[in-house]
Image 1 (cartoon, one colour):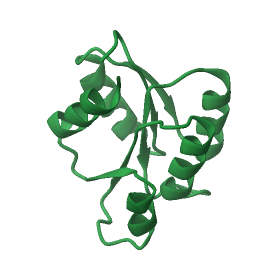
Image 2 (cartoon, one colour):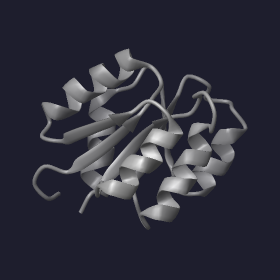
Image 3 (tube, helix red, strand yellow):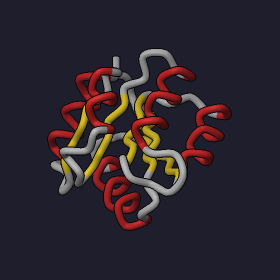
Image 4 (cartoon, one colour):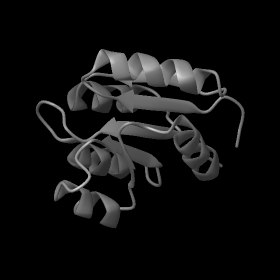
Length: 120
């Protein structure tokens, strides 16, 4: 893993963003956050990212569709989708698209392990 990978966290819940930002920063990641799909796509258009962590259920575009859009804009971008709805039909398409799914409550160690294994 290269030094200080840049991670985009996308969630409409500020508490989740703050918790993940704090935890992942302690593991050496640089964190940016977006609270909507539109904001996330704008950030990706203006800055490089090494991975994204996206909530499944958000207002507007759902996280599975956003994950697909992010992977189209940055080929091979590792995307982790987080959800409390582990039986959602949206997850089938996400998994087929190569998106890793994490159930809430999140295990920070599992998430860090995913990021470390996926970021060159």
